[in-house]
Amino acid sequence: MNGDAVKLPRQPRYIQIETIIGCDANCPFCPQKNIDRKPVIMPDSTWRKIIDDTRGLGITYRPFLQNEALIDKRLPEIVAYIKEDSTARAEINTNGNLLKEKMSRALIDAGIDLMRFSIDAFSPETYSQCRVGLDYNRVVDNINRFTEIVAEGERHVTCEVRMIDMDINKHEHKPFIDYWNGRADRALIVPLYNWPWDEGVEMVKKPCIKMREEMFFYTDGRAVLCCWDIAGRAVIGDVTKESVLEIWNGEVRRRYADHLSRGERDKIPLCSRCDAYKDRHFEGFDD
Figure: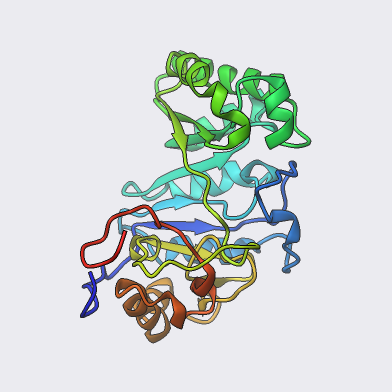
């Protein structure tokens, strides 16, 4: 991938929309509590425009970014609006703490395609260390009830359960997988990524695949290069002033994408302290 820039798709495949800022947890590995951007809630006109601009393109929409999706009470309405397009998919990541039965049924009725649950533990003791402020037993009950409601209905919703691989939960990997494989469609152990600009994070000179197919919007309508950009270090446009595809194919994003395809992270402030994909092999780059 080094040398000339790779040919990039003319439209995104995934669009993440930060419909609200906030979370009901205080996890030690997540910088969400450091976000002080405004507005707290994305105006309806903004998220509707993002969706309207990309109707019919087969987009997978994720109405969350650096927030807990379920704190936005409009979520079923947003999902239903997405699913007015027969080519579109809707999916969310959630810690599951606020997933009461009423919300579960509303999301299923709205047409949600995938629910991705982040649990990160298989005991209340371990859970209390990595998902601070949440109740393990409530979360497990909520997720199990969601899968039961899906099984009782006619419409399938894919349920994925994840554990982030950390030192404090390694001893629970196997029981976690064994338990959730019998209840969810997928149970996964996923790596813990370092947030750019975290203390001690050093850049790797490798390409980035995050920006190739994905697009990310703040509550104020600004589009940023990466979902890990909590401070607006790589803004590529503003959907309140231009269309989604104008931003995607615009000069700013293209310039960033060219640098990243050549592994030139040092030329982008956000990426100059990022080690994402450090263990991934890219032809022409050192492992």
